Length: 159
Image 1: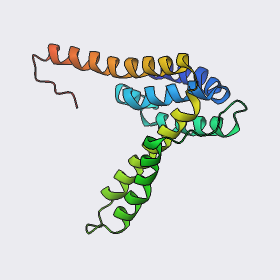
Image 2: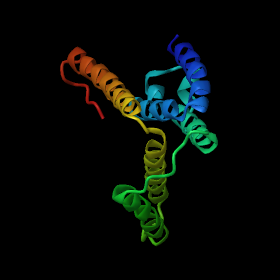
Image 3: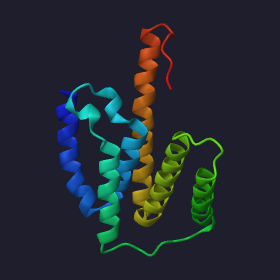
Image 4: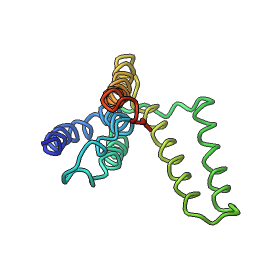
């Protein structure tokens, strides 16, 4: 039942995310923080929902009519400078383990999300909505973890 509910919710939100990039950014942050696939056991558990939402949001940002030019402040420039450094570090790593590239891929995703937030969150209301998405994502994870902690008498560990 949860799988069907999440599927219907995503089918309702993805067209909105394609039309309004700020909704896509909020959905991207929410799915990244909540990780809804961890709470599913059916057909939706294997769907990379965060990657789908991220791709739809990037496409929406590229075709948006009302987007503003990229505001490159010091923080965004430092994040952009971190990417070539991370790439250099990954290519010149002493250990040739695939974990190096996993870490670089995560760094690249965070950098793309930072650029998406900078491009899409142009008003105070959109920024407050993003904060609400963060609170809902973290709050639901904390509530479920807290209830599991109480139900198991402290044996459950939230990671």
